Length: 446
Image (cartoon, rainbow, N blue to C red; front, side, top):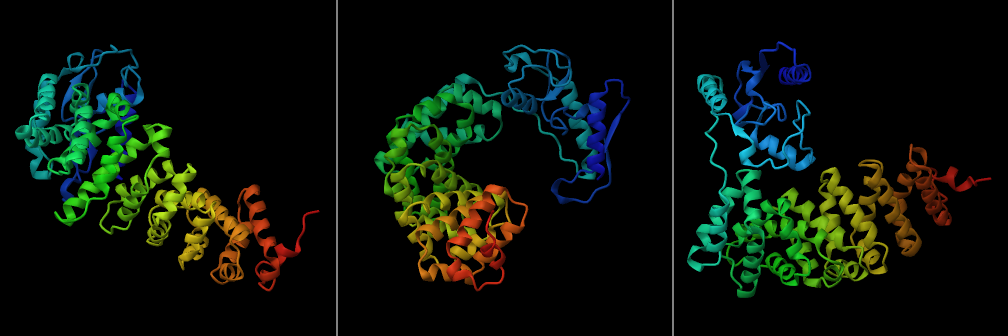
């Protein structure tokens, strides 16, 4: 609460230039150390991030910001004005247009040193911005076999430091060079340096429009990522799993920008490798979401839908949902299941899993409105097109029918209740002995 009140006080002071607030009271919780309150001068705080500045720079309006925060502000908002004064700034906000405030940085570093006893971490001296000439040299080194490993490790270190380095690397053509390197690894069947290359490409992707253009029509790159996802574990399970995780993160960014022809030509191997990755127990949540996003992007095409079903992905999706993942993951899984259950083979694979209907019915009214809609859609497909006597009885026994009745009683949209009413009436001859739905089966709209 102390931190929250302090941040509110700081925000108030920024909104009111005449405020005489001289210091900010907040708890420093770094390194999980219990400490007393520390007085932090307000001019040490970045007006954007509300954190102590690590690399203070002053813009032309005279306001000082943390370099990373102001650069991120320009990048994400496209608002070339001073966030505090609202005055316009030069459109070219390069390193030359922002003046490093060395005096303030030294004061901050001195203050951090004095308060080290209270658990305050020292602010390191900022490194010089990445020189474009040096970035170009790293790209050239990538083409020299005995210099590749050193160049990739240096690229990874630079890309992970800050957004400024990533933009400099993008301008030097690092993204396109890495795509070529990854394709070469695929063609030669080698994995040395591949992990670093994927990590750097993931870092620079968001700031490099030329890289996005380079993957359009580049089938070799998609095949290269498919190859990485299908690598065996002969060289160590953990290393290969890390490679696959980085590949799926890059693939998630690649799929939305490729053209329709590329999406339509995706191979069965592509989906089988993703399905296998989803079965890995040590995979991160970020990688799971990326894999699900890739499947969602590819699913609208009928051929891809059949390949996803054939890959065994439906079983893996249900198993993944049974682990009770976070809300967004559940919504992605239900989105996929709803799309896959619109075809006969998809419904057949769905019903082969003993817990499929029970899982869907249990999630309805428990996750989100989107999940409710998709869950009812799945049950609608099953009840209309795959409703054998055994399936209809199973829906009653596992609580799917009861859950549909609860939807009728809940504060749900009219269109959803109409769809549920249709499901309930569809099999009234089997379900009419269930007291929880009798009122809905006997009621007819006038």
